[in-house]
Image 1 (cartoon, rainbow, N blue to C red):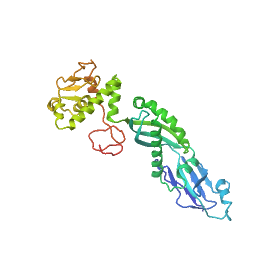
Image 2 (tube, rainbow, N blue to C red):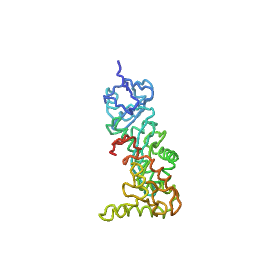
Image 3 (cartoon, rainbow, N blue to C red):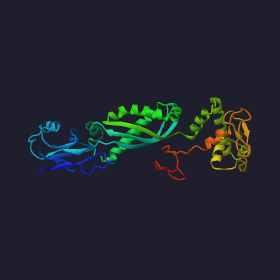
Image 4 (tube, rainbow, N blue to C red):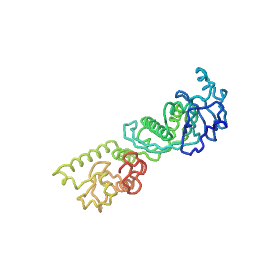
Length: 331
């Protein structure tokens, strides 16, 4: 009875399976099930590919392998040495996440999901698997790392404001650009979806103030005030002198934590638009800045409701956990 070479129990999340015996007999049968392909390897190279069906191993249906074996005396004898690799041809889902920087040199943290499938088994096998004793986990990690690397490279051509405010458009552009890269590895990129994109608090504040119509001079003033307040807070005698005025971001953090500014000796907030002190009204920023007339209270309330993000992968923090639910980083 001829030997049957097959992948019996293919699981949905398994990409590859190596037939455990590297000796193959002429006349053996290779059974390729639905959503599978089989590839014959010799000397670390993927050669003949078999699609769905029952194939008797003869010189006719493994022509590339036969051409190599002909150089060896007695090639027609059984058994001969070759590896058989099975590939899962169904759609796969992968996760990605990492850090990079945008065209304007702003730090960026992102995470999301992508979907792909093996399109050319021979290219996939030779570019990713050949010469490596890879398992499904190894292949999955390679693809995830490669995808993240490509995303970091592509996002370096985008500005921060475009990346964070036009995420759907960015995803579509990335998918188009990365599809060509995936073809080089014998894969087809089906879809890309960002689950979260974030930057550092400093750049997030810049985006927020820019969206509120703050000019470049206003941003510079607010950042100068913040650095001055931080320096004052680190001093011994100057801290009490500057305790009555806080910066807008510090006021937002107080609102998040339900702290009472009056209990902390705070009587005014530095307006992020003009930089001038605005007296608190019942412990809250005034509705409008008395110096420039810009709306303050609504801006502070909106910012106070904003989600917090993981410092490692940028995923939104859910609940009051101490570790990120996406990457496991300590919060």
